[in-house]
Length: 143
Image 1 (cartoon, one colour):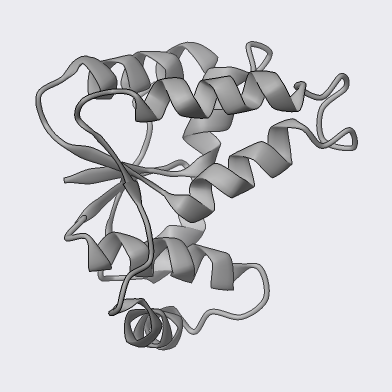
Image 2 (tube, rainbow, N blue to C red):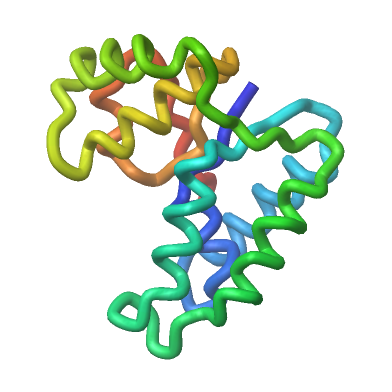
């Protein structure tokens, strides 16, 4: 199973991004495919924060539009919202240790931990920081 990281959602949503077409195609392939795939809760909240932030995008995306994007993705019959469960706390601690995560990398560790909790072994992302976590395979966006 594969999960999708924030940057892929941002690229697909924002047409001005150089990776827009590739990210859109990747999400359509996942959403219309037969294999299950996941979106970690932390990715949803980070996506909403990034695309609606006026210091990141000018103009920022309206929150209502960004929420529609999330709902449309999660409406795919093969999509799963990956939520933290009973094993999240020890998995988060182990993932933080595994990647020596501090600062902003703690959010990456939380994404990896929730993926591990749901049996996700791969993460579609262009964020190279995830390579510091050996428990998940980084799958870069195809150009």
